Image (cartoon, rainbow, N blue to C red; front, side, top):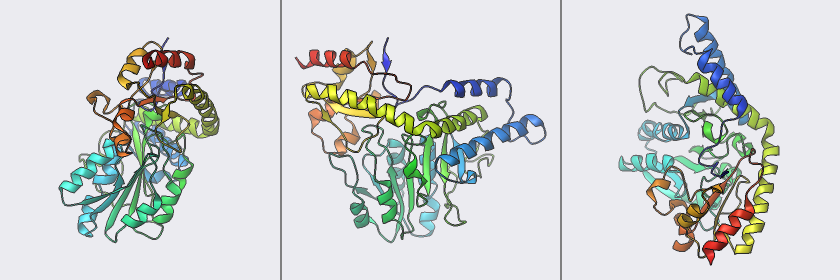
Length: 375
C-alpha cells in the first residue's frame, strides 16, 4: 500500500471533522444569511462558532476573521484589496520574496502592471530571509510587506518575530501567508504586528474549498481593504457569496483540534523527520532549506532526477517535486531557483511531507529504490 507523503499539497480530513461536515450537509443545511427561520439562525451560529475557533489559533478577535474559499483567495483579497488605499495615499511600494506562492507573486505582479513597484528580499541557500535586508528595502511609501511563514516547498520557517520588530515603527501592512503553518506552527502568528493572515482549510485537516483571512485591527482601525468581487456583501462586505457553512464548521473544528494537539503533533513529525534524514545521509543527500518545519523535508540526492525517483517510488510513497499548483507544468521550481541552487540540485529535488496521522515512513523501501537509481 502506498504511503501518502504529500501533505503539503493537501491533507486528509479528520474523522471528527468529516462527521460534522456530513451532518451539516444533510441535517443542518440552512443559509447563514437567512434570518427569518431557525435553519438560518442555526447556520449563523455554526459560522460564528467557527470564526471564534479560528481566531483563537492566532489570538485574534472573531470579528477579525472572514471566510474565503482558501488561502489563494485570502492572499488576493489581502494584496489587491489594498490597491485603492495605496493609490489614494501615494504608497505604491511592496516588499516580498521570490519564494512566495504564486497566489502572492501573481497578484503583486498585477499591481506592478498597474503602477505599483515591488522590491524582493534576498534569499540564499538557506531559504530564509534576513530581517536586516527588510530594513534596507523599507521606504516611506512602502504599503505592504508580504512574506510566507512556512515555505510550501522547502518548509523553511521565516523569522516572523524579527520581521515584526523591524516594522514596529513603520506603517506598512504586514501580510503573512500561513497556509502551511496555521493550526500547526501558530505561535509566531499571534504577534499583534501582523495585520493580515491567510489560512487554508485543507492544509490543517479540514475540507478543500474553505479558507480564511484574519484582518487584525490597529487599535480600533481595521485594515483598509476593498472587495475584489461584488454581489451580496457577505463577510463584512469583503467577500460576497453564500457561505459554505458545512465547510466553515469543519474548518473551525479542525482548528480547535489542531490547536489542542499542536505540540504532540510537532514532536511526532520531528521524530519521523529525524529518522528519514539519518537514512538519507547514507546517500549523501543535500537538504534544501534551513530552519525547516517538522512536517516536511526537501532533499536532493546527487545523480538522481526527481521525475525518475517519483516513478520509482510509485506503489511505495506518494511524494512530490514541488508545489501542487505548478507541478503539472514540469518547470524548474521557482523557489529552489531563487535560493540559487544549481540546476542539477533543483532537478533532483524531492519533497516529502507528512502529518500527525502518518504513523511511520517506508524508509527502507525509499532508500532501496533511490539506491537503484543512483547505480
